[in-house]
Image 1 (cartoon, rainbow, N blue to C red):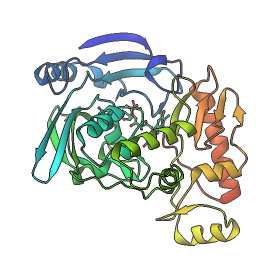
Image 2 (cartoon, rainbow, N blue to C red; image 1 turned 90 degrees about the vertical axis):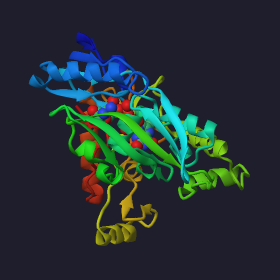
Image 3 (tube, rainbow, N blue to C red; image 1 turned 60 degrees about the horizontal axis):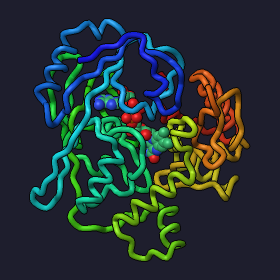
Image 4 (cartoon, protein in one colour; image 1 turned 60 degrees about the vertical axis):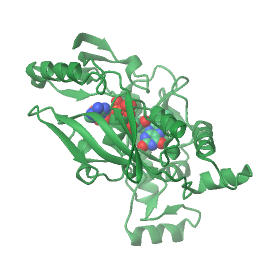
Length: 340
Ligand SMILES: Cc1cc2nc3c(=O)[nH]c(=O)nc-3n(C[C@H](O)[C@H](O)[C@H](O)COP(=O)(O)OP(=O)(O)OC[C@H]3O[C@@H](n4cnc5c(N)ncnc54)[C@H](O)[C@@H]3O)c2cc1C
């Protein structure tokens, strides 16, 4: 285990917030190829005094907003490899938790393992993708999870979770509900052997149609999803962000009906899910800035760092946006990003 004190996090969060961690612990050893080395480091970690201060596992920092220096220990796991295989009616990839989610999609497309292509180009690693049950373009990670292996940071026990035990929900899971308890180190994903494009997300279906692609291949779905995403989102190397800052709010049937009557153009998705981006846009926030934080001009759901922004500035902007949406529509917006 490598330990550093007073460690700059500027390069470890995609918002590019310039804060420090009191301590960061890098666990060595690839979680699949060198499990003994990895587990040795986990043992060393568990014997240390890390629980005496706040602590948190950190992935690629693409869903985090640090509002101040982190007064505890961050835990970061080592590089990851993968194993693939065919079992019964499905294909499987077992990947170390540090592997980037987009790298897993790239591998699945290379091997013609089907079902994950709609999740192309989501930043972050696969361990964190499980925590957040990442979703995009009509697919959520829960649709692919077979098992998740994690270490209980409170007791030191190891446990393998089935998908049902992960208690996945909209951008949540057991691991998010029990934040701080579990260190995910290995994820097994199940893929289909037969390609059936998932085109339930209208913008994806429309874009394929616009390009005259009637019967897309898996690679074409990946390419179009990737292009669509980056046409709307800030690229982390240019502007810092955590992607969608808010969750799409889910309201009751009566509220959805009343709002639709008053705002006939308002998108309402199945399950009375509203578009947070549309609500924010209607309040006039798209493209506006406050301090050094801004609302992304091409997608109002994204708050971004216009340059040198602090986490506090992001939180202040988020609060004002939440208040405006509440005042105009009576709808509460909850952050999807994790404010630390
Ligand atoms: C431009 C952009 C676009 C995005 N688009 C999407 C999108 O379309 N859909 C979507 O769902 N999200 C999206 N996101 C959000 C983000 O990419 C995901 O939430 C991602 O899974 C976070 O991964 P990470 O490795 O950066 O995790 P981090 O931000 O480092 O951590 C997130 C959480 O996971 C926990 N965690 C991390 N690793 C582990 C582990 N091994 N074990 C236990 N807990 C762990 C952390 O403690 C923290 O609570 C986007 C972000 C950006 C910047």
